[in-house]
Length: 380
Image (cartoon, rainbow, N blue to C red; front, side, top):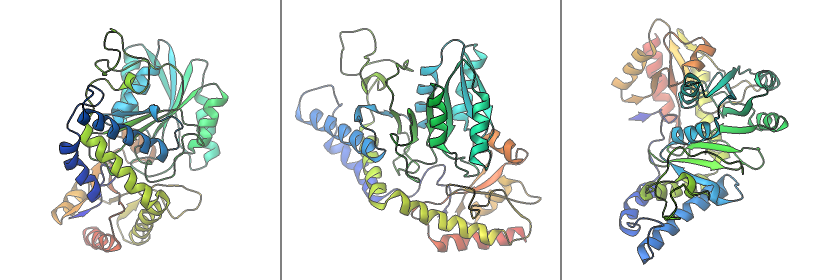
């Protein structure tokens, strides 16, 4: 199979990630933080080691701010619902994933908070101005994706964080499509909360996410329960990371996540980005010359920053039909609205969606040539 659906989840996983899944069942079979015998202590140490690896990777000064979650959606819900209070207001972009839009819409329908949508623009200064225009006296945070999961365009994250802080607001980054692919430094970039889909750019297994807390503001909890600490108290602990890690952690997944972080650290995000973008650029160059192929964002344009994602359509054919044709020839891509209908509305593809191509470090130019061959055949 030629796999080009890495924006959904990376495949294959590195061998060391797969080994960690298996080995953890033998070496780290105890419940971390619950007991004092050797295996429990070793399991706790493995969790801490993973926490430290994540903190170092994103330059977080205090590893206790690394929270392991079920996925990126859980991390986003934790921040959004933890910050939302009666009458509060948020500003988001018009390219957000439903993991941001739906929690906010739910809170809005319940009369808890409101939100405004700022439009993305290829010009960073205009994007910043659009966000600034939406801020009001009740705004508590700007929430923004690092890059569109549909069209790959990147947001000026550091400038948005500076804008938020200039108004005394918090900045929340949805790094689902950027963590592990582009350089992120939470201190340098001024990120207060960052939510990560570890199974994507960090090559971890599915069902493990990360919430990074780089701010001292009190955040309400999404769930409460056992933490192995302060068990005599009926309220959730205030200390991190226990406050947001109620219940038993998934030790095998977190152990494998650590190996994924190490894999990306050794390869280097710059190297990974250059490799994946070289494939995307070649795809764009070749596809732009094929009749009946519609493309939406030119990654070769110097004024536009993108991640390795390319959406297209074949005229007269729905995105699902194109993806199905490719699937019949053992090529994996994703079609439809990609859980981000607002992004499709922004780019005028809300009727049929798009076909999305997203490579990873393991894809080669031969994969690109195979895909191009079938696209040319279908378009013709």
